[in-house]
Image (cartoon, rainbow, N blue to C red; front, side):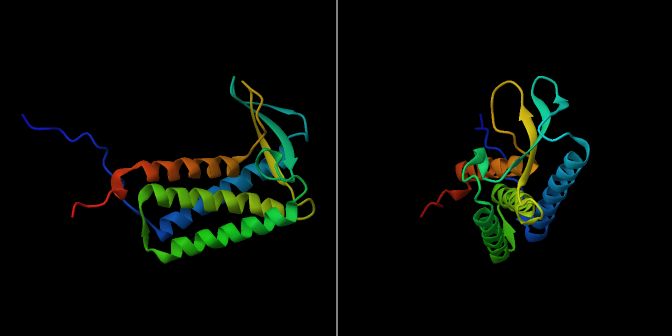
Length: 170
């Protein structure tokens, strides 16, 4: 009886163009949703149900980072967004292809960083628009760029846990 290999197949690597296109798509979705929220929802009021029992719309702003850390530090956070974006583009440019999960993580991180960076760099307020509110429990209100950044962390973890990093036998 033969032994069955139960390992999941490794997805194909992502090339630079794919990574940058995914990043661009994330920025467009993030900025489009924020523009819609600012045009259609009342500020600091309930904007309605998005997913019953899970997610509501509630437009607010954040002049800090995640969980309102570093509140009031808009300029340094804007600079940090810019530097992280440059660093990711440099990383992507060093290799023609990235392993799938690492490439997806880079795309998500770049798109999310640029999405929130645009908010921080844009006059007149220089604040990040947040509008997604979890209903079942108290959690800071967030946006699409924040979701992308958190998914990037998950993809980096998946990449780190896959067997592609194993050393070949000597």
